[in-house]
Image 1: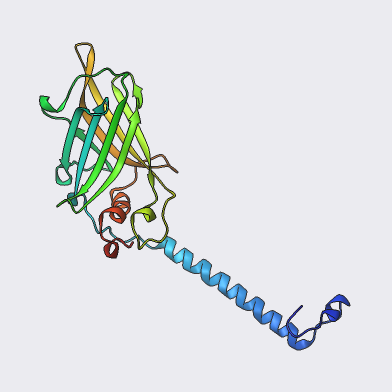
Image 2: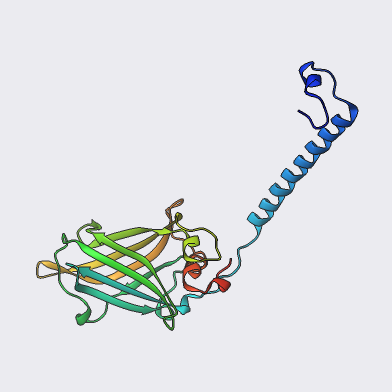
Length: 224
């Protein structure tokens, strides 16, 4: 029933008292104003530029292992962020050379591999695993292996974000560049990055850093 109006009046389809009609108009007006205000606030947020991340690429260290048969390390790379060459388009994608004969071992291209990519905050104040992937990957022309792993939602890494689990819409991407050596292959270079599932393009550096800070920084500093 309408507040203050007997049900019988509604059943008889009689005109509502003037006071009740005014209350209904006021409620409708308030609802419209609230809807407009919410839409306006959402539009303002959409047009605002996101804040700069609290992290920079120089705060990070990339630690990458290529492992075969559980414990046989085929390649290990430790790369500080200040040694990474930024892409000219500002995307979060980096090419890394695997240097030194002691860091590589020959293996069969068809062997199952395990790829582990950790991002470490300098001073070992935090670690986030971008990828811990088992399998053969996707080998292109026999000399490029491609591995990918969907990343968790940022809310899962920070108690101040509220909630946990779910998907982020982002994918960690790692490619192995290899060369032949006596019938086998060795890892010669790598490229790592973060892709958007929606556009299937690499995200910009700031977007990736804003994501990573939820997992690497204390809760009080990771708000965006």
